[in-house]
Image (cartoon, rainbow, N blue to C red):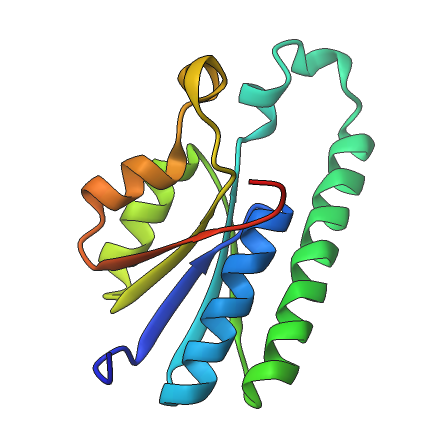
Length: 148
């Protein structure tokens, strides 16, 4: 564990990812590691099939609100860790971008939350945490959070 100097916590702004962030903050604080928060969201074209019907000003507002929310989580993490915490917001498929990011940035540990979905709900929604555990190039800590 002492080798975990570069920690990445994937956040989707849910209670499960907030629980993961709390664990990541504790580890970064305890081991003197750098903490990076990573939020990956579907690009507007993927989330909104009829993108032409959405005014650009609306997309700007949504983007600003997203960055503001991530910024609030970043401030919380900086207070807990006691030093600067980096935050990155990327568009794309969450599992793909998380795996790519930790590989390119040579992270030692990835912390992710899980909603604990099972059965048909998991089958329909997929599992970012499960795929990341299978494919990440570093150790992965999965934190159960929220109502799971």
